[in-house]
Length: 209
Image (cartoon, one colour):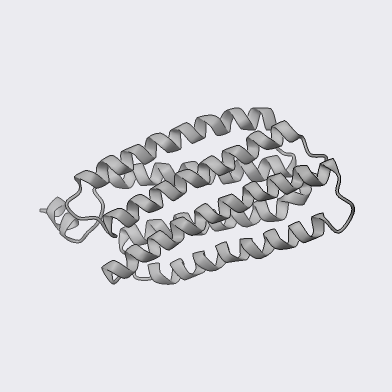
């Protein structure tokens, strides 16, 4: 009866919840690794190896999410929107991995200039993960968290623009071009996070949560 009640309430089955939690943990790990690389606390070559494994784990978790969603009678939010969230999260993990890989390849002399945006991404990822968990659990304050999450992601766009403007105040150098590419990769992460948040919002609106 408890299992049936959970289905009728739109709560995810344990396997779906576990797969989604694992996917979000991969996103958290990827964002944290990016920050550690930016601050110089992590060696890029070692970070790239860890990031590759994490990316594959994220993909495996995403496949499990898709499989479980297709089998669920009812999902907490619209089925297609939940799959869109999953795809956007996978895209974010991939973009974070590419940032780490390119940092190893470019070896910028001043990676600290990437720290403010990397810190913002860690904060945005944390809010997104909490928001998704709350929506899936049917928490009453989930809508408020969703708005906070959208605000955090929008703030990343402003930070990216400021960093880009500061980058080209002086003459263009090889170093500035490297940073330009890496900042662009982080902005792609922002786009994927925004896609996930918007998809989640669509699902919330459809279910009237």
